[in-house]
Length: 207
Image (cartoon, rainbow, N blue to C red):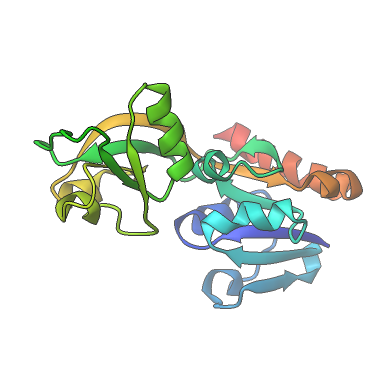
């Protein structure tokens, strides 16, 4: 049985659609269930539903053989997994944003983000000294209440930034979802994993 870690939320719906287009017979309960583990015996697959930031952890530790994770997670977590395939779903990008007239007058401006490693590396490469404030959600709130001068966050349509009076200032990196594999599983379950990759590659190549 191949165990697949899937991210709950926006990426999940696109990933399930991609798998179905690749010919996998996935039950309707995969879309509707609140279960965290769903077995699909007819496809010899088990799905683990996890938070997007946790998928690579499950794959790294071998709890899941393969997983679907955003490139943002891969850059932030730097897990010991193989990144096999760009699934080209859920496109977005990481960006620096802030108030349109916001000035960074501090010696070490504060940057709020749930991506502290990416943000630190980005500003360090630019030669800018900043103080990173790690938040887990509602990052847009930080500049509005004076907690931070800038934020680093995922931007998809830009609607959330606009609704909160923020503007994108710098693009850091493009992000799509990737298929990742546990190194041991890649050897021990080579046949089903190679078939999985091949079937998805065909669908992606048709787009």
